Amino acid sequence: MLELVAAHGAEQVALTADPETGLRAIVAIHSTVLGPGLGGTRFRPYTTEEEALTDVLRLARGMTYKHAACGNTLGGGKAVIIGDPATIRTDALIRAYARFVDRLGGRYLTAEDVGTTQVDMDLIRTITPHVTGVSEQLGGSGDPSPATAWGVLNALHAVATRVWGNESLAGRHVAISGVGKVGHALAVYLAKAGARLTVADARPDLAKAVAEEVDADVVDASTVHLLACDVYSPCALGAVLNERTIPELRCAAVCGCANNQLATPSDGERLAARDVLYAPDYVVNAGGVINIAQELASGGYDHDRAWTQIAGIRETVSKIFALADEHAVTPAEAADRLAEARLAAASQPS
Ligand code: NAD
Image (spheres, rainbow, N blue to C red):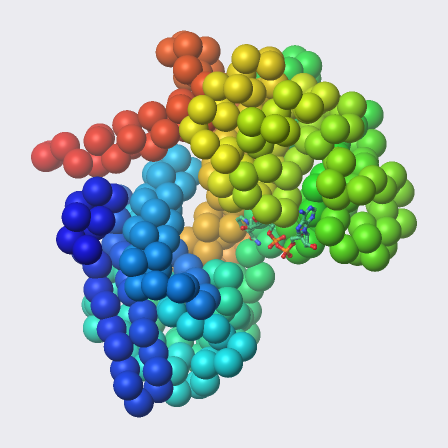
């Protein structure tokens, strides 16, 4: 187990097991170089404890890079609760989890993730201040999806500038795969910007409803990546850019909110070889964490300040494209280097 922690370069891992409520949870703090580790709590039925530990270590490291690249003064952290929330979640279990987070003294700040909800965050807030993403009535920033979509729109402007020399998205054909919380909000933004839209979703009813709302075409979720378009925007699952799909793409760029879009690091090279510009996912989808970080700002959450900061994703993405050119690396590699440079600068003794 300690080898796994070392291999992921984590600063600290904390474990808890509470027989009374059935809580079994792990917090991984990857880096506090830029600030306390902030990342969501994933609640899912991992098959083994090793699988849970591997996942939380990988996700915590990802948060370090995301915060660093987008300019947050926060570090990388993540938590997992082992078990099926549909069967084991009780208020008592969530309260026990909140006490565990509280004992970490603010080195880890939690938030919502797959399997946890805003109701859980609100309950955690009754026990500890070290939680974000609580509801607006409690002074929180609410659902992060609109903020994430606003960030993706800004990233798309950077993509347009890079590919067509003009930030306008009017008349550009964007194919959105997944019109859930973020994809739907993005479709609305893009329609206002005058883009031509095609949407797809594993739930055809959802795709149809969004298409009617924003005057888009609908295609099947299994073939959306084959569409001839300007930008393919993955807004559903990860690993959609892989050995099989990349040769089939017929777009100039890929820019969407889904996490972990590249199946393997070499898929970044594969996209470059096909001359498809890739906007790195963890930078494109940072609007949610930038928004949540505003809850920690002095004076508390302020929507306009958050939206202004999220718009900075446009500049960050442009900078990443410029760095990629300068060092002859892929945008994915350039994003990692940008994050690492910020971490290295913050680690220097003053
Ligand atoms: P969501 O569950 O609301 O929406 C996802 C949509 O994708 C659903 O409508 C679902 O039916 C659809 N879908 C599932 N499988 C599909 C497939 N194979 N092809 C096409 N559509 C499919 O989720 P969301 O909050 O909109 O998040 C979307 C993605 O963005 C996820 O990868 C998430 O991790 C990432 N993300 C979300 C946020 C946020 O603020 N919500 C922030 C950062 C990253």
